[in-house]
Each structure stands twice: as C-alpha cells, then as structure tokens.
Length: 267
Ligand SMILES: [Zn+2]
Image (cartoon, rainbow, N blue to C red; front, side, top):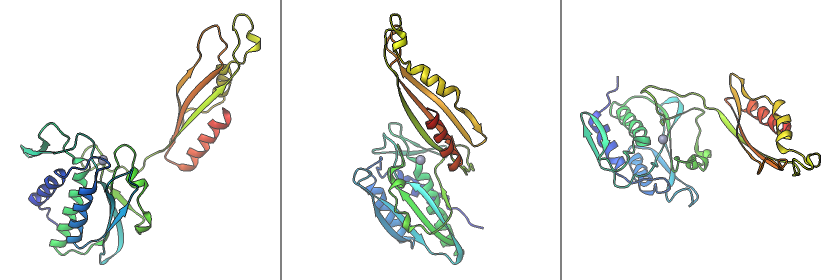
C-alpha cells in the first residue's frame, strides 16, 4: 500500500506552476524537470527540437525497474496564455491562480502526479516496471513537441498520457484520425439569362458528385461531412467556381483512408 504525500505533492505542483512556460518558452521548466528527474535517479536525455517549436527541449527520462515490463508516462510542459508570473493560492483545499493568469494545472498536475508516484515507490522501496517519461514542449495549439519527439528513445509499447478533462478517473482509450478535404470545382461562367447553354455550372457538377457520395455516419467508427461551401457572385451568372471543404474521421486508419479516397474520387 503506497501513501501519497499530499504536502509534498502540493508543494511540487505549486513550484512547477510558478515556472513560466507558455508555449515555445519551455526552457526553464524543461531544465528544472531534467534536474529534478536526475535527482530521483532517472537517466535524463534533453532532446532538441527546432527553434520555431521551442526555446527549450523535449525531456526523455528512464528509470530502470526490477519488474520485467515497461511503460511510458507522458505530459506536456507548456501552458496556454496568460501564463507569466502565475501566483497560486490555496482556498478551501482548492488550488487556484490569483486571478489574472491561468493556473497551469494543464498539464503540470500530470507532471506532479507522476513524480509523486515515483517518490512514493522509492520511499517505500517498492518493485516497479521500467518507467519511461516523455515530457514535451509546445503541445497547445498543435502537438508540435510530440511531432518532433525523438521516438528512437522509446522502448515500451504502451503509454499513458496524463492530459485530459472530465471527471477524475476518466480514461480515453481511442481517438479518431481526421482528414480535411478541400475541393475546388471549376465550371464556366456565362450569362444565365442570355446564354446559359454556354456555361458549366460548378454547383451542378458538385451536386451530381455529392448525391453519389457516402456522407455523415458511415459506420460505427467512421464519419464524413461537408461543412463549408463557398461560391457564386450573382444570380445572373452561371456559377464559375465552387469551393467545398469537407472532413472524414475514423477510429480505424484504413477506413479513414478508404473514406477519403471515396470522397476525392467522387469529386
Ligand atoms: Zn493539456
């Protein structure tokens, strides 16, 4: 039975949120965490990322365990704005920001939880699996830190990412892939009153295609939707051009590819 040290956990969390780390400016937090993980006995690797992604680096850390197996635990180190000069306050057992900034619980609560779990394991001298940590820069706005994470360091085939909303205890075990389709359909303009037979109506071409297209709920894992149509200048001109923006999503990568191909071919 392990015992979370509540004061130690809160102190560490409070310390982490006071290190400014808005997206692309994670150098200080990455440095601090690298040192702390080194003190906990982890082998720490500072993994470089392009300058436009961050002034800091991704952190990979590994703690070998005596139990045969391993797991990756992952969090992001950056916060949204306004996240400079965060002053946390504790009121009735709830940690808040003083008011003019975010708190930064996303995702530093995950980092604090992971490191407290490791401290518990160590202080009670428990056997554990090999623990791999992947702490990333610049998650907010596009997962850029993960995109540039050097995956050659990762050896485990399973990971838990501590970064989701919802009630405590919520586990998200699948997420859909998504693809966006932009179709530009070209017709031929003509005066709709004087010489309509000389025109080709882009929207009629599109309509023919769309009536052949499987859309909305495709199956239990797959959806597709046309969300935006833009075209036309005047009622008396045969529509010369039409832009259609659509998407497809699926929990299954092969089905996503098939749906996207179907839509592109039908257009
Ligand atoms: Zn997050």
